[in-house]
Image 1 (cartoon, one colour):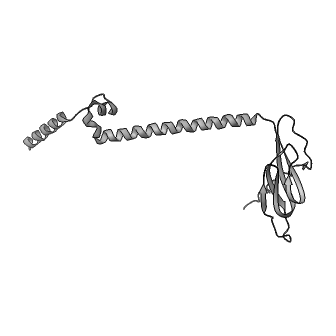
Image 2: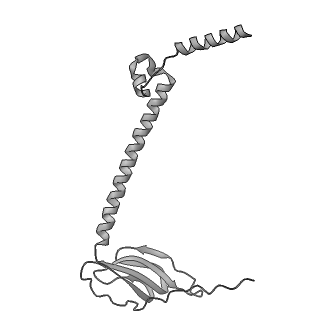
Image 3: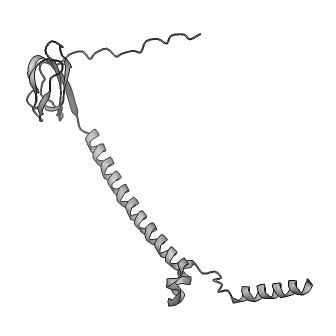
Length: 172
């Protein structure tokens, strides 16, 4: 039994001495030290990992550049003086804004079931929106930019009261 142990220990030490030890080298240094090592699995895996890391770094740089550009554009837009108004139009087929204002949205707020329900929005542009039939009420949101926006007509003077949620019912 002792002889088998001595033979196994000797074989293990010969095997350890025969291994190619890298010492303080990095994987990249070890792979480039000999042209024969380029086709080893560890060198192939290292090359793939470096390629992914480089690609990912470039994508992060591109994304951060786009995000910084978007932030600069948003900061510039926030510095502008924007005036928005809501025009409430009744019994019309189209909604429009005053001169100097741009139409940003158009919403049918009232409709009747006898009249066929909600009308179909046929077209919308920067100046007007058109429905397929006359509607009971349309709210057109119009915005103007600049230090002195032009006066707006037919504007709803009061905002609708905020909807407060009903008080919670006690549960017993």
